[in-house]
Length: 118
Image 1 (cartoon, one colour):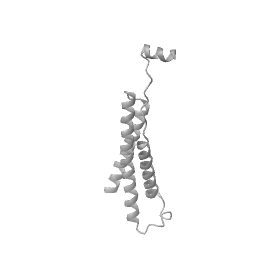
Image 2 (cartoon, helix red, strand yellow):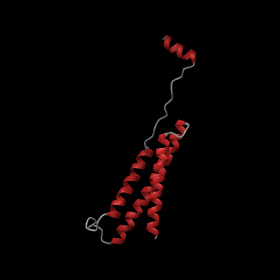
Image 3 (cartoon, one colour):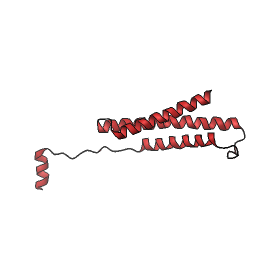
Image 4 (cartoon, helix red, strand yellow):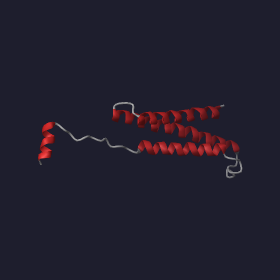
């Protein structure tokens, strides 16, 4: 009981640990899986994709998955970087890593969107 009283007298407060949500992580993993599936479908040999009837549909589908996966990764890791920055009050290594992964997702989305358009 004296320890509890000393803490209250000296102004030592328990550290508040903010709750971490897994929404950004789940969205990032879903985006990475979609982009990975799209990359596999885009670069796979024709005999692997035997279930696709038309080649044009397979290319559009894979490029669409790559673009969508890149955009989902950009949003998820951007939100995660912002949360880490707000929690730490500075740009820590975790914030830089999340921001870098978000930029990589954006680069994937823009690159394959340009390939799709051109």
